[in-house]
Image (cartoon, rainbow over all chains, first blue to last red; front, side, top):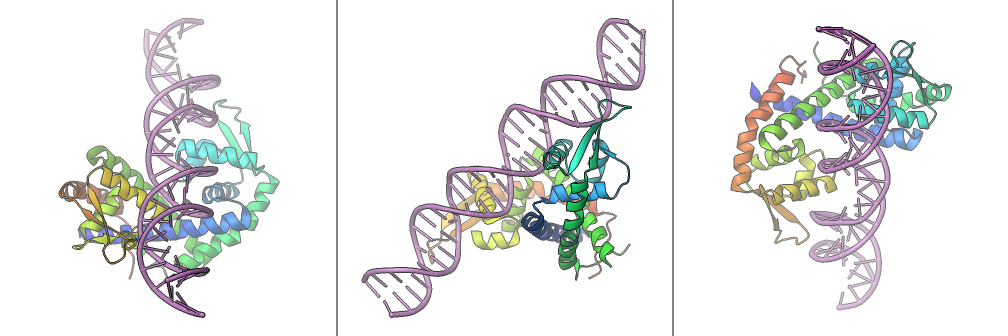
Amino acid sequence: MDEAFVVVWHDVLAKHARTMCMLERELGDKHGLGASEFEVLDRLAGHERKLRLQELCDEVHLSQSALSRVVARLEKSGLVLRGACDVDRRGVFVCLTDEGRTRHAAALPTHRAVLAEVFADAPVPVA
Amino acid sequence: MDEAFVVVWHDVLAKHARTMCMLERELGDKHGLGASEFEVLDRLAGHERKLRLQELCDEVHLSQSALSRVVARLEKSGLVLRGACDVDRRGVFVCLTDEGRTRHAAALPTHRAVLAEVFADAPVPVA
DNA sequence: GTACATTACATGCATCCGCATCTAATGCAA
DNA sequence: TTGCATTAGATGCGGATGCATGTAATGTAC
């Protein structure tokens, strides 16, 4: 049925708006981080090795240019380091600094708390 | 479980990004409409009577200021009309023009097609 | 090696968004 | 009535995004 998709889409839209708004406010006020910034830190924290910018781009839902700027901001804040890639000198590696890891760890509970609040009574996907 | 929320959130994030991107491109290319513009037209088309800006604001996931500007754009394009409210002269009514109704009708199939493509194999919410 | 296509990332630009604020109208209390 | 708080909507502003493009490195064909 056509209408079913519309209902699902509206639900996605509503949850996205609500969650994003809360994340932006909570992470911003309490940790000085934007939602995109946290997202990048979170992905970096989930990997041992350094990540290519390109690999990050696949995991975060940002355009290549937006990601480039988020990483630039994070570097200016001292939360990540950018390094040249040996094997392909066009590439750029990114990794967390100690402070980056600390800030991420501090912000994690806030992030999870927001998700818990929004999705507490959420319809859980079947599969 | 904490992690379950994260998985759901990532799914919302992915679907939102994918759908928004496709909607923006398809609606933009084929009908000269942005996703927000279509959203407003769609809500207006779903109601008989005129809507207050404030009522629209509750249905669309935009800030009051963003909605104000979307409606301004739509009016400049001749797709909606803004009219003063008799009972409360602070209020503003919005309604579709004939062209607005036509453009919405033309764009609807495109919109639904995108949703169908993205949510075709989507995990349907339980309740 | 030379020439051209492609890739990885950076950046100029236009657009859109949310927040804070402004204006005008309304409501309410004294 | 006057005076103040509240509300509806518009707007200035800063910031983030995506698209198109630029730059430099790599790959490929000849």
